Length: 303
Ligand code: NAD
Image (tube, rainbow, N blue to C red; front, top):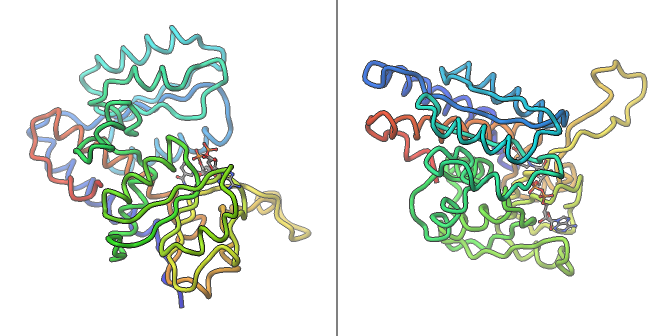
């Protein structure tokens, strides 16, 4: 029977450590950690994610400096807001919620975040540190995947890993983190030919393609490990449902086809999603310890 990699449970365990870390550091630091999540416009999925993040901050004692900005904000105005947060001593971490409206240049804005406050590790300097294998804030979703694998004692060294997806947010940093942990990594993307024969070679597959049910039985080798990063809200096929039951969450993987074939998999919901939020908190608390001159006690939680 496959091992279900329970991200919800691990996220709760790490949150408890973070909460205790904050409580024990408050006397010296004289302030709580601060996180600023910047949301632009009214994308409903972003609204849900930002809400999760704010609630998680409240649970563990991180002060939220959230900014919800109008859809048509100009690049210059947004740069000024980022500058203000860079200069605000009470803010330890800044996250720009993606995607942004199309008139805003994502790369330009990410590079304006102070790399030392870069809570999602997407500043070019921090991506450079990741490539070099040096310490620095790491992108939250792949960092969450690494924590999930580590906590479940899944050996990465020497494994053949395939990452499906090459986005700067998930796929690329994921591949680099696995490679840093001594896996042999292949990246697949939308132009990859014959995906099933590639993924069937893998001991470990991380799927971040953003395509519901892309990966099925034909893609998977017996006893492999499958991490499903995708998250989608689909209409439910069941009839006569209450309003709240009319949609259901699914990932990029047909778990129902592979659950009896693999050694371990991460479910959707309850796998990578909760870990992403927790790693955002972990990055913020780590930055806070650094900014307040406290010992860095949670580095072992970060890849
Ligand atoms: P993206 O659209 O930026 O990138 C998708 C990548 O998948 C691209 O590199 C593309 O080349 C590749 N791809 C698309 N179709 C493919 C195919 N048929 N075969 C192989 N590769 C293909 O998306 P993203 O931001 O990387 O996010 C990916 C998924 O992960 C989305 O569903 C997103 O909602 C989800 N996500 C979840 C979390 C979480 O916390 N669980 C966090 C971030 C993203």
